[in-house]
Image (cartoon, rainbow, N blue to C red; front, side, top):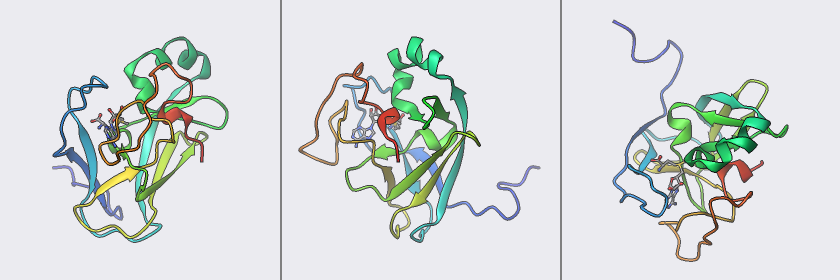
Length: 158
Ligand SMILES: C[S@@+](CC[C@H](N)C(=O)[O-])C[C@H]1O[C@@H](n2cnc3c(N)ncnc32)[C@H](O)[C@@H]1O
């Protein structure tokens, strides 16, 4: 039988079905989120998400016109990364408790706790100031259009 996790790897978070309503204005069939399984210290590495590299030309021709646009992280070189596993399931908050770094060379996105997090808390990242959905955590969010170049995770460059 395979071990649940690799030796030396501490599991801090897992993705699970979140108790949030569906978001019909985005066409999501199931609204999921990432939640802390345990207390997490500020600066702790929560997740290293391995990714599929989407070259710039494929992004421009295909991906940016699809729902995957909302799941892509832009690299400094203009390529994009599609995070696998929990890396694609962090929801947005204007007061996020998770910071992230896109590493195009290693083809990973690393997620770090921006502050101490309690067990059970939802782990959120900041998508940017222009949102294409109504932020369920805020009343003053802006709504953009899906085909606007800076309304996606891809617009976030840290
Ligand atoms: C990267 S996905 C996050 C995972 C997504 N909840 C899922 O289950 O696939 C981005 C999408 O999640 C939804 N989302 C993320 N943060 C949200 C928020 N604060 N309020 C409402 N919907 C949110 C939006 O539909 C957005 O297009």
